[in-house]
Image 1 (cartoon, one colour):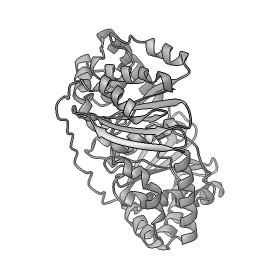
Image 2 (cartoon, helix red, strand yellow):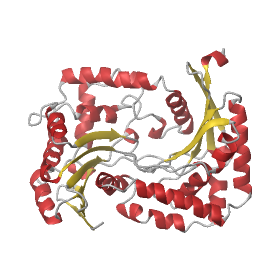
Image 3 (cartoon, helix red, strand yellow):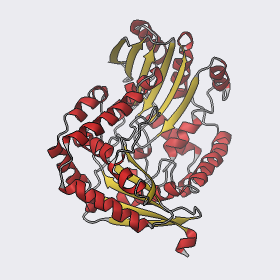
Image 4 (tube, one colour):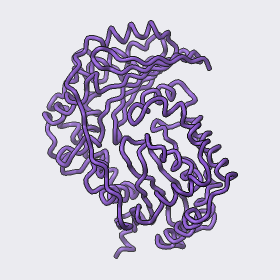
Length: 428
């Protein structure tokens, strides 16, 4: 695959990442804002996600629904996502129509309407989304664990926000949040596909060069202190199945230890996909916890989740309890397997297999133009593009001694929150 990358910054502070890829006549454009639930506090939790919704309500130049129809007509795709550290908007279009994305994203960066009637309508949509989440056992369990794991850091709140905040956030709250964070100096524009860099630079300057720079935007957080003892939470609901989630405080993505934990994750549960956009999968049937718990018929499923974040977050292991066992049985079986990891170095052969699986999943997650454009901007939210380019190299340098030290540091019982989801009938 022939590629060429070029990074630069406009005078108004807009960071631009470009990557020429000539494998197909399409162009994928991603606009990344350094704003997510990390930038929220009690009273406005969920506001970043709600602002994302409002960005699809139109501007004077691009009324609501117009772009949906136009992009669908030409066979393109567009959408958006909000997470802990970022909000992103993306589209993938035929190469000769890429200016639709450039023009529309530049326009709604500064001209979104936030009509009061639309705000009220979208309040109902977001509240309904929150209510739908509350019917999901793992959402309830995850929310309880986050609140227990983080005493003051904004990561304690789910991206959707608290119900009491969704009911009281005003139009002015939303618009002020938009004005504060949606500005060139807080933005990464990442574009990959069938174009020449010089031509694309001219188009970017045309659409974005005259946008106002905006005020300097820096949002600092204090690191969460390490736990001194294991914590436990229990939630219940109507779902007849029991679940266990074990969440360990994990390093931020820019910490060298993150790569060690990535290998541990692959050893224990199979590798986590770091691509939030999603692509590809690998089997986890050779992982230690799958063999011990799923093949041992103690749990029905076992998956891990490690995400690349700006601040230290969580590494979670999710288990669905087998009908013939209890959550306590599952936790005991996990701890027995973890004891082996904490007390006996993992062999180089097992490490090599785990790295091979992680590499395969990483390759799947960057195999097409849309995913290449994703990585081009995503890594800037927590590190830099160099992180993506050398990710596999870092994994391949992991030794058994380093992995044992990382396991003892991060998988220690005092560094975790254990959560149980129990059916209401069993609680009664």
